[in-house]
Each structure stands twice: as C-alpha cells, then as structure tokens.
Length: 219
Image (cartoon, rainbow, N blue to C red):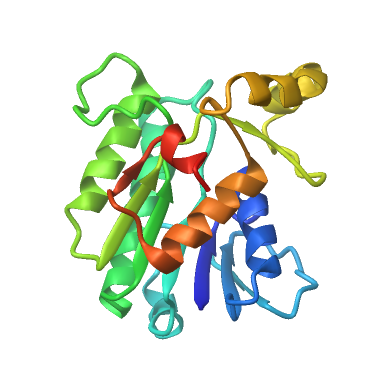
C-alpha cells in the first residue's frame, strides 16, 4: 500500500507515520511538508512543497497513491476565522482536489475533531470550519472518504505536540492519563491507536464515513 501523508511533523501525524513504518503492508509513504526534516526511514520519501493551496506540481506523484491520510492541522486559539479557515479548510480541500484529479480511486482520510459542527451554523468557530471541511469532502467523488473525530489524544512513544499550550497540558496530566483512559476508554485515545485506526480504515474501509471516538477506540 502506498500512503500520502500530510502533517507528519504534528502530534497526530507523528503517530500515524510511526504506524505506517511498523506496518508490513505499507510499501511507501510520501510525506508532503513545508520544510525538510530529512527522514531516515527507507519507506519515507519527503516532498518539500511551499504552496498548500495548489498541489498541481505533485500530480504525477499522486497517481500511484492508494490512500491520503490528512493529519495537518492547527490549534484555533488566537487565530482569526479567516486564518484558521485557510489552514483547516482551504489546504485540505486543495489537497483533496489534487488527489481526486490524479486518481479517483484514492481513499481520503481526514483528521477532524470531536464536536465538529456539520450544520456550519454553531457559535464555536473551529467547529464550524471543521464541519464545513467535512461537508465539502463528503461532496467530492472519492471512492471512499472517512472523517475521524478524535477527542482527547494521549501521546505515546516520545511523541510531543508542537503547540506549547498542549505540551504544558500533557505534562500536567501525564501521570493521570493511563487512569483517565482506563476510566473513560471511549473518551481518550492515543497516537498509536489513532494511527492504527487510520491505517485499518485506509485498507479495509468502514461502515460509515464519520468515525467518532466510540468508533476509533474499537481498533
């Protein structure tokens, strides 16, 4: 299986990449990044791309991809709706269009968020934008689209969030996380479990397009 990965340097993306490297069925990972990270894994081929609103230059490389795992995202705190929409919605849809034009058989998997607002009318900015992104992806003529709505994510295997506030939160809650996950197994997942869930769904599909936490924690 050939994977296209966006957001490999983020917390979720790091977890997904780790699972890709461990999975014998994953032949290769094409990682699209803004700045070079010089990956040291034979499976990974990194492409540095500056314009995340136009991926036409990558068309020839996308034709052989089996699944796109789109894990790119930012925290909405301190951002205007316009700036947040650019990264969350516009970048995602631009990547999806490029994938669809290159190969309609690609499965497109997107990391959304718990409480994403499908009505696009709610008062919470980030939820509206996530909801719009989900809706626009579902309108596209992919073979399969799956939207993951994780809630609280516990980082494992040395993975860290790139958001300072989240790193502080994880340090404070770190000792409690195993207990929280044991007490609330359907409210807490891990980077490992989420990565495995994305890969399983990329390979085998799922019974519905939107996966809530209760679905993610089944894997």
